[in-house]
Length: 332
Image (cartoon, rainbow, N blue to C red; front, side):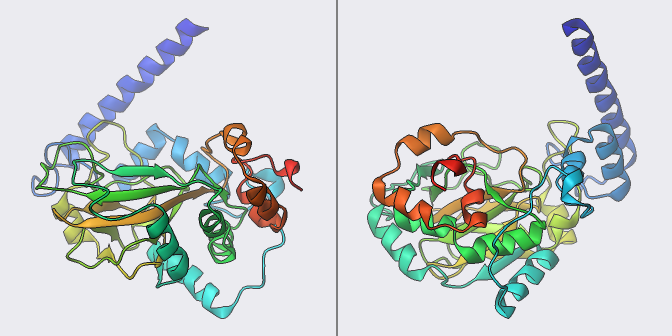
């Protein structure tokens, strides 16, 4: 069986490489857009061939009702229960997210942002310049972290956007960026290249410092979330700056501390690095059920009595969103 599986994978890889060579010779000849490792494109025919060759991503979209909203009984997704009534303002945020792939809610977590900045000492002195991100695991025993993660606005927006129950993919983290000097484009350490993330994933950023265009910040390609992308080589995952600037409206993710940014990370995005500037934000990833990180036992064991008491107060859609962080039945 292993022999046949290896032969199947080998054959599939050879076919994929053959397709890529043909695509390179036929559709990716414009050297202004396609060069070096930057061979990504949204050409519909090219993407059709890629998805046909590697259908895994598009099948996950279909299976979790992200292409057609067929009955839950026939899907891998679950219905969200006990969702609150949807205020007009929240409905507007959902429509913006569907249209643009990204929505900004200025200063929504202003007080919690200030508390987190103080608790984690988020300042340039405690996080000196270096050539890669600082990533801090955000402890659920910090109730500011917990309450942001299960916030009704975030989860309701995502439940309506997905059309099903959203799940936290893994523990939240606090991400800090403090680059000292200019970075070479191909050097590792930061996601400063145009890319897309795990299929069906949406991401929430809570800004923990004021950010302007003069600071390091994320860039997002407006509307790029509506394209079903796939790659078949190590090079055609990346998109060139020239291609992006000529084909998309680029949105800088800046704002005051406490601003909530929700975006579909299947859209194209990258960090825009500004040396000697400091950026800090809380990072949350959500999915409709695919590719979840199973780590509930380790995290659950460290919950304080206060955390457990807060978990008991959650509505079903909130508790369910943490199902892969702790077993729902333990506290309900």
